Each structure stands twice: as structure tokens, then as C-alpha cells.
Length: 93
Image 1 (cartoon, helix red, strand yellow):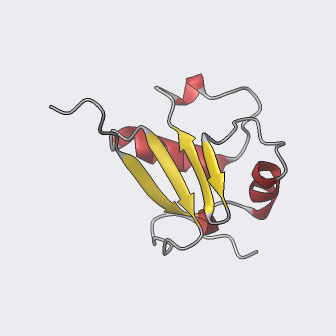
Image 2 (tube, one colour; image 1 turned 120 degrees about the horizontal axis):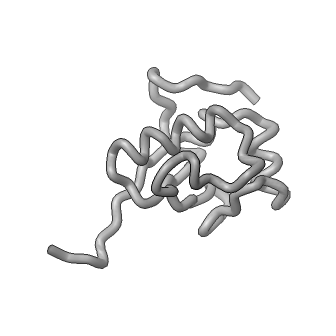
Image 3 (cartoon, one colour; image 1 turned 135 degrees about the horizontal axis):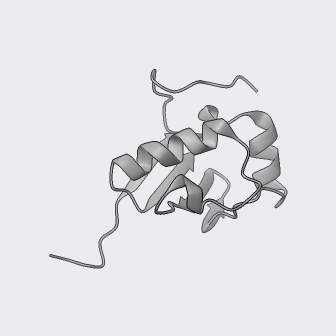
């Protein structure tokens, strides 16, 4: 087994509300991304939702994190170029 291989959940930024996107972009979101670029952000996935930093109040963000946890992922990549999926809410901003 290769221990230096990690799984990530690939998710459209359209699955986050504009308020959350602005908070992430401006550095005001309660959980900081591990990495960022002009296409989106990479966030580490906590062990449980209870391990999320206090102040993460975006249900859409928590839903994606829960999906990533269930899939055994270590990271979520929110990417503007990833197509939205039908099983998550899409925010039109």
C-alpha cells in the first residue's frame, strides 16, 4: 500500500452559496483552505463534523464534507470547472 496517496472529493464551487464563497475568498471563513488558486480551494476533511472549526455555519459546506467523509476522502477540492451534480443544491450567483 502506498501511504503517500490521498483521496479527494471533486466538487463544483456552484454547490456553495455566494456568501460562503465570498467569506473563503476574503479569508473570513471559519475553516481555511489548505490550498487555493483562481479555480477554487482545497480543504482538508475532518474526522467528524464535530471536529469542524466553530463558526462553520454553512450547511452546504457541511454536506459536502459529510459526503467526502463517507467516501473516505482526505480532501475536498471545490473547483469552478467541475460540473455540478444533481444530488447537491446548486447556488446561482
